[in-house]
Image (cartoon, rainbow, N blue to C red; front, side, top):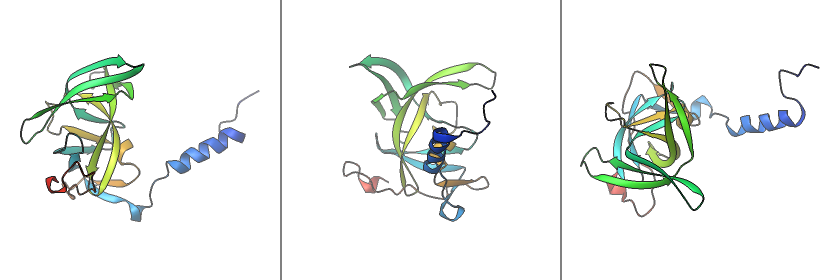
Amino acid sequence: MTRPLFPTGIAALALAATMAADALATPQELLILGWAENVYLVEPAFELKAKLDSGAETSSLDARIIKKFRQGGKRWVRFALSDPETGEEYVLVRERVRTIGIIQHDGDTELRPTVMMQVCIADRALDVEVSLVDRSAFSYRLLLGRRALKSFALIDTGNTYLTQPRCKLPATVKESEL
């Protein structure tokens, strides 16, 4: 017996529900962003330049001293971020979402831990899964991939810095810092 190419029955309903949940906004509802934008990291509360890359599925963030560990039955990551303006270093601890394999241009695979970070881009506060990696050799410390952008934005590849971060943030972050 051959299996159908398309799901049927309950599998079809589950697929339809997933597709509906992931449905994109209509073109009129999409925000147009440049291929580079200023983004605000809610914690540790600083702004940085981000490259928007529809060729990358997962976002990545410049981090140093990346240490994975287990505590209380959970997987964690301790890492350091540096404020590009002041050079001040912040040490953060986040629960590890997963470990991903990134295929490099030379064909090698690099394993990276991912964590959730809250970012503000334009008027959107987003919880974004980012892989942690040393991006010091790159011009942009944050790369936002299509998974982070797909539900609300289009990338205008001919423009940069079309917006400024202006989210409503918790009281612990001063809006004057944006």
